[in-house]
Image 1 (spheres, rainbow, N blue to C red):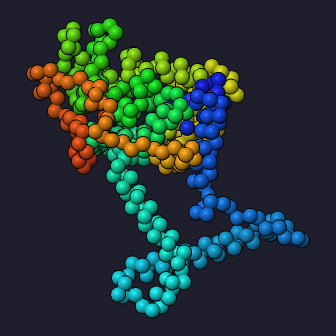
Image 2 (cartoon, helix red, strand yellow):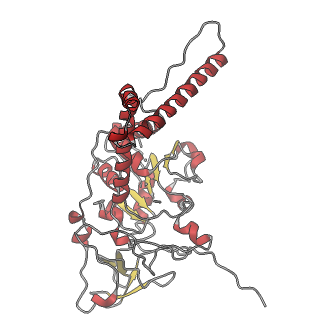
Length: 411
């Protein structure tokens, strides 16, 4: 989930799953980002031709009758188009040698419909490729999300998260940051994908921790160890020791995950200070793919101390209802990747491609010392492309602390 906001001194502005604070560097930048987001939303709503049909003006006829007549024409045209598409689609599915003369005549008379079906086929194939390239991590509070399944008593089968890679939305946010249209990113996710998308640490607040980072709280300041594997294999709710030792003081290292019922106290990677400072300067907040059921409780992120009309404008992109929908300037019911792609097209910016061989986590990582190789059994990140996602993992932070507590019956 991402939250975005703009600096107050500038005029201005918004991927399965769950928040960043964004800013511009000149007076026009924030306005451009806000206008582009609205334009992207409009493109989602428009038809394939990109424009709505003008309303006819008929003398002596009431507006109500004009609207009814237009609705009837539109319905008839839609029914005819559906019938035509169905017929042409049936013909195209036939092998060429089995098509009759009537079939060929119809195809030659419906060139536009044939082209439209070809475009649909190409879009479907592109969407399939997108799904193969996406992070492959299920959402959290959706109908089939991890939290939802556990709350209903069902089991959760998760994939190896080391196989996940930054998505189009992650890379889009990094591009907006480099263009100084985004100032700060606030994330609820523990998957480390924002860090791996080359977003600087100073511009990132991972409020619920990072599965690749373990820290020594005995050193001052706390000493961080970024690893190439999930460090949470042996940890759980209120039990955070990873089993490895600090290279400097020799004390136990702990993970950075904040479970349900816990309060995050680590300075990094949570970076609450950076998130709160960015929120104070924000004119706009954009929420990408979050249910906001947890984030809504963090008053410092929403500038609740201000009077309502002086709070940052709120833009939400999510397929579900959120508790902030009623106060949002704009709510877009769409997938984050789709909206991000349209947004950057409106801004004439190209989304960078994720290159695993240049992933910054490889340069930031601290290697294990001799004798620590057996301290975990998780798969290591490598610079090679990952294989198929789907191997079941157990233990660690994923889904911990979600199940409902059951009180014991008194005897």
